[in-house]
Image (cartoon, rainbow, N blue to C red):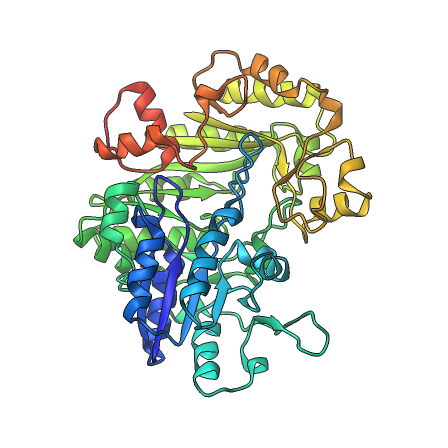
Length: 481
């Protein structure tokens, strides 16, 4: 009973490799624990896989990663926790081992998710320190109050205790072996693999839940990132996605990562994508990105209206969007602007201002989401809760009853847009194929990555890369890689 079982219940398609399990598996092994994995994303029959494992397996602890609580998509509003509940309940039926939850989705709603699953252990925030510490305390019947970031049942009060976390210092981290999960299979079936260059984000956008589970900003050594990329390329994994919140913040670190990739001779071996802030994005950084193998950048533009950008807590302007578009074109970088529309104060005029700007700047693709997912602990989420019952709020849509913790999908859509907001926005976009707009009126343009059969088939046919870019190349007939 010296093993810890890591479970991935996420079954979205195309499959996304659970990077967290690579980190946790390595941390557990370094702490002297054996590691088993049940990756239920890669099986057709999760229940049978669980039964086979526990027929002979007897782990000290079962750790389940909750990457997504829902698909954060106003049109579909797919509540992933309902699917995970069946899996976790099955584990609890066939095993007496304690179950601990963790992951970026879990860390947004630590106590609420434990209540939802009727469990009493969770790790809020980073797990590399916390999970080995919890396993040691369980093995020795020790004190749970010693485990950083642990959320656990408080026997006296009937509620939960939450221990303060200990941030993970990535500045001393080396390249990971990336061998806990089957990354080769994820690459074959998912078309890309994630790499982390940093953790956390200095921004405080009004809607974003990332800071709730990531304390501060911690940077990996650029040389370690480049060495990890080289190791993956040696295994044939040559299309990567930097999964940082904003790759170019801070810009000097992004430049360092690009320089190390170039120094190791990987710029011609790999193709990579990243999420970026529209500013700052300089000619110098763009040139480094292009030489280092950048295949495309997804900029979180959010809006083309300065007034709405201020409402959303963004620190750039529409002029910054124009400068970044020009910079990408000068350096031959394929790029996308992602929009988040419908927040407080959004009007038909601001929608038109945004769509007109996108058409003028002409990024390779524009992702359009109408409706802002509300999360507790964010300015928009807390504002909605402070305004009274969700069901009485004309701007709140989705699960508005018996959902005071915002656990089930709930969205803000400005009442000033009117009842036919989706139709109005679809009319502004028209037949412009550069726009990905998921709506009931434009369902065929849906670029939701949750169970997307078009992407699954494209990857089977040999397409690789970021999903928005695969969809772009499919439309343009420009090939698989």
